[in-house]
Amino acid sequence: MNKKKKSIPSLLTKKILEDVKAKEIDFISGLIIAGFIFYIICSIIVGFKNIF
View 1: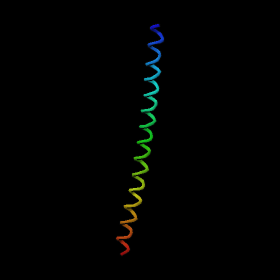
View 2: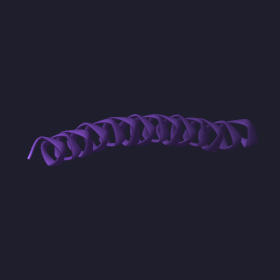
View 3: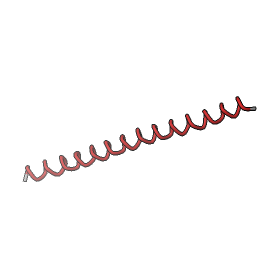
View 4: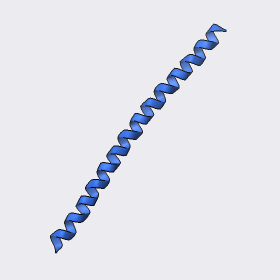
């Protein structure tokens, strides 16, 4: 009885940790993509300022 009770929370904890890791990776990749887009937009704006 005690072994069954212990295994369920550990499985839940493992699942939660995996979800947190996946969300962290998504967040970091989102930040990288957003930063790249921001850099492109800024370089376009600066380029237009230099032309005109």
